[in-house]
Length: 221
Image 1 (tube, helix red, strand yellow):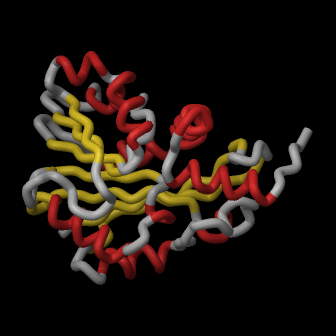
Image 2 (cartoon, rainbow, N blue to C red; image 1 turned 30 degrees about the horizontal axis):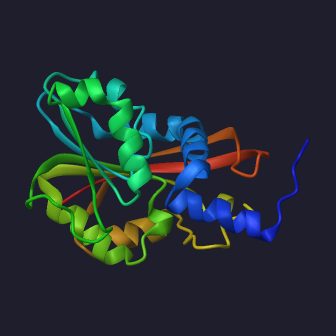
């Protein structure tokens, strides 16, 4: 049975999706992991991971997908970057084995300047974060700075025509379609190489079953 949400509850959902905090944040993180898993798996597929790749993920959430990612190729090095302290802590809790083995590391930052040298990563990906970038061009420039020559940047996002019909996305979300994302990347010199479009049935954060249209794009310098 569909639950009716007040406007305050919808605002709270939107806030938690952009920056999970507290008890509700843990619940939202678990829901996000489940609902975003197919998007994350498709993004990892389009990374075309190779032996020894240095991989960065922006906005990893609870990061329960890191183990399967590291199994994609030998010698992978994963770094996760988050603005949410709660997600930073949850990710470390879920990935102690990989951290202890020196295969994964997690960093919290202010959403502006990443704590890495230029060209530090062969592959960078991000899933369902682009809606929350307050300064999209600056964020894209920063991701390009971190990308090694001939490296790949993969962006996974739900399509504008889907997002604009969700009841909570009127609070703090920016919608994107293919053209918007390609224009944003082109503005900093990133060119599209590959694209995958998927339609699936998922349970929304407002507990409705909906048909989600999402796209994963791969770019290079």
